[in-house]
Length: 531
Image (tube, rainbow, N blue to C red):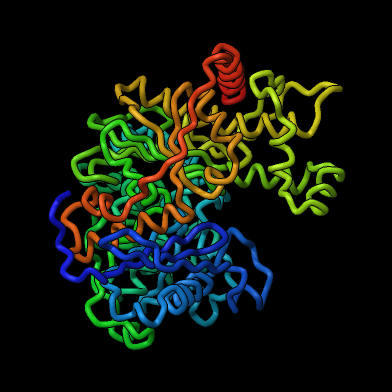
């Protein structure tokens, strides 16, 4: 094992993971990787959230700040407070927070708290689709260089369309904006008092690249007069790689929470870009899945992959010296929850209530021969994030008959998630990227064994599921240790702190041809419905 730079065996770090509905924190001993304590809060419990029912796609910065302070207050027991050396935040992306000139979130200013366009815009806010289509059409007409890095597409989930929507629909709000920060950048700003940028946010969501810069002035001004200067001003700030220090914890916060001075704060990260480090998926050919509300798929590559429909690739975007490919699916856990909320039969609900077993477990227990599935689904309930990138697409279920039962629909939804992942993997492999192994984490990966077995079966590859409850938060802790100078590289941090235990799902070779036929049907339906 490499020599580490830890000088105190008691040194601890904090990883903070801000998901769609809740935030989590882990306190980790850096030398051993032991998770000393974890804590979770729901944004719905914040004072701001309790005071009014709001559009959940337009969160208030107050909810996120409340969660940040709650985590720092409760995730670190008193006896460990003088051992904390580093903190790192990851968060859903691109969750846009407009910021005023005085550093406050725009929604915190008097007169703006009830203005929808002054609120945050959650990653899955899709109401700027018209602006995204307009920007994409102009970019294609001008053959903008950034399109090579975004798979030839432009998503309404990203910064530019969301800003265009504010400019179009609420010009007085737009005039008050001084900065636009992704959520991980905003929370890092709150911790340090300094504006820094996450390379992940900028490269994968902000149309910026280290070698290309921002989109051309002609393109931005062609969208709206003067937008080139506005976009550059809104997105300003030094762009930091994962694990680079963004500053130190503010002295007033050290005093407030009882921490020592000099705690390093790492650059903010996308929530799907930390778990790969916790799992050790850091070599060329490693693909890491985080399966939750949506799917995030990160792939490390030695070659530049500019593949149509794969909407993010950046050198050093995730690991130094490698091209990081950012991909995924817009609707996984959300789609399964939709099914339970809207399509579940009363008998299964009743059995779940009486037995204390989740409907997921009841349904998966009823499925005996998944390779015989006669239904096909497309997982486009929230549109398609990758392969293709088109948020306007809709989900589908095909193959209903008088024999169709709830378990059949549920199985089709599970298999659609896997087929969506395979579309992405097949696409990048056609561009010369070699996939050597697949690792997975996230709440669903640890709970739904049938889904993970179907991953192995439909991908025809072994899938390693990390035995960890808080993979993204643990990954953030690794980058916190790197920023604090406890380790020289994130690989070294993994040797001490990363997940070492995995459940391995192997493909069902006996029914391999049946599974391939299922995938080919799903692939054909995708080709038909994306036209």
